[in-house]
Image 1 (cartoon, rainbow, N blue to C red):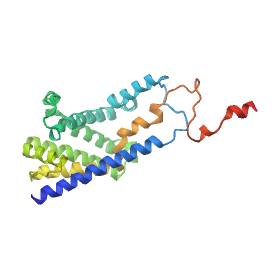
Image 2: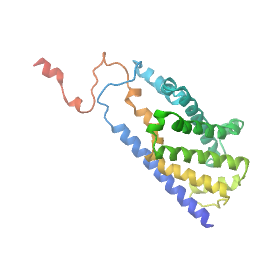
Image 3: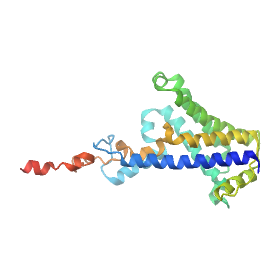
Image 4: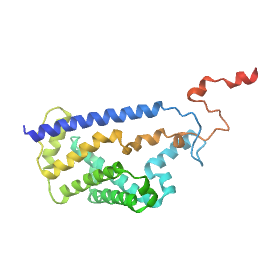
Length: 248
């Protein structure tokens, strides 16, 4: 077994462990964080079903971002949609036989790589061109965008310039999942792409990119606007019984 195969196998085992444990830890913290106040962003739904519909709109079409800034919404939505399609397409490297629905994505895959990079460059450009966004941008924001652009660009280079052995690559990842190492193609473009992906997996749990699960725990999004109909009790306020005090 080559040194490259062993190094990248260990790298992806470590990166996967950090990603899974780190994201699970963050979700645990989000779930236990008190929400002492009733603060849904108005106009807000007045039923749980309405909240569910609001969350669906929030994670699929980024409703609040659309109302806030159309250019940011456009670039952000293009990037996330193309990323979702690319991640779904990459399932073929981890599942044998490949899911039947992946063949439906064949045509879209010709464009999603470009869409990812275009969306990211748009989001990156606003950090230079928009004064108030440039003011609040720091080095980590630029590094995160550079990392994502690098992943997209290296993926495009393998698709159109430096083709790699897809069959061997799939065997490598299937072998990782069964703890049976298989040779990894040592193409430079592939190794660059995998290194960037592993880097993203490692820093994802501690970066701003972890906003995906966070939206489900945001009190401005997941609360029902029924403060006039039902008393809100949460956290330390649950131990105070004001009704008895008022009766006395």
